[in-house]
Structure formats: structure tokens, C-alpha cells
Length: 196
Image (cartoon, rainbow, N blue to C red; front, side, top):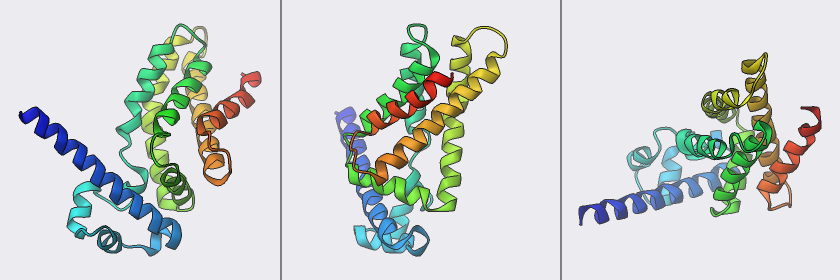
């Protein structure tokens, strides 16, 4: 019985968190991240600023989210392909899988998140921190798959190039008409494929 209650509590908490983030992103996108306060977001959702901070320690977290959220999923998706396909292909599909999983979320909220993040210096810095956390997990996995001299350098370059493709893909998706973020990502990876 307690497992059911705790599961429902987690679902409810996730739903409230998603609602707060959606309202915050709508306000940030319309009025500018720096021009909207936590108190304004909280009032729009119908909660206190203190409640907002129970879900998001900082205002930036409503946009960036939990940096660990995708880290392990990316690593697992890469591991599932390691050894059966080249490292570049495995990276491409790991990132594409993450985007496809996220496509079940509201696309407009996702687009707002990217627009707000790319237009705000402090959020771009936080996004780089998130990417570094992803790179810290992915780079050793890629290095394990590569062979020959310069493996560590090659692994770091491949992971950073993959992150660059990811950034270009989501920025293109957020500002364009193409609804297929994973398709855009695959095309971005394909641009670099011949140069590898």
C-alpha cells in the first residue's frame, strides 16, 4: 500500500513540477527571463515562492531542469549500441533516442525552453555545465570503444562534436517549422560523418 501511495505522490510531484516549469517558460519567453521574478511565476501558478523553491532551487532550474535527468539515459543508450555500431553512430542514436523520448512532452514548452535558454547568458552557462556532466559520462564510454593511438583525444572530440550537433539541432528545431527534432539531429550528425 505504501508503495502505491509513494508512486502516486511521485507522479503528482512530477505533474506539479511540469506545470510550474510550463508556466515559468511561458512567462520567460514572453517577458524575458531576467524580467520575471520567482514570485510572479509562483502567483501565476497559484503557489507561494517558497513552494516554487521546493520544486526548483533556483529560477534557472525551471528552464534547465535536472542535469542528471538525461545523463544516465544517454549513457545507457550508448552502452546498448557499443560494439555493434561505430562510436559516432552510437552517439547519434543515443541523442536521438533522448529527443524521441522527450517528444512525448509538450513541444511548445520544449521550444520555449530552448528559446529562453539560448537568449539568456546565465542559462547558456548552466547549459554548458549540463553538457559537461553528459560529456564526463559519455567520454570514457566512447574511449572504451575506440582503439589505437590518441583514443582519449578522439573520444573527447567525438563527444564534444556530438554535443555541438545536439545544440544546433535543438536550436534549429526551436526556431523552425520542422517538428522532428530527432530527424534534425540525425541530419546534423550526417554533416560531420564524412569528415570523421
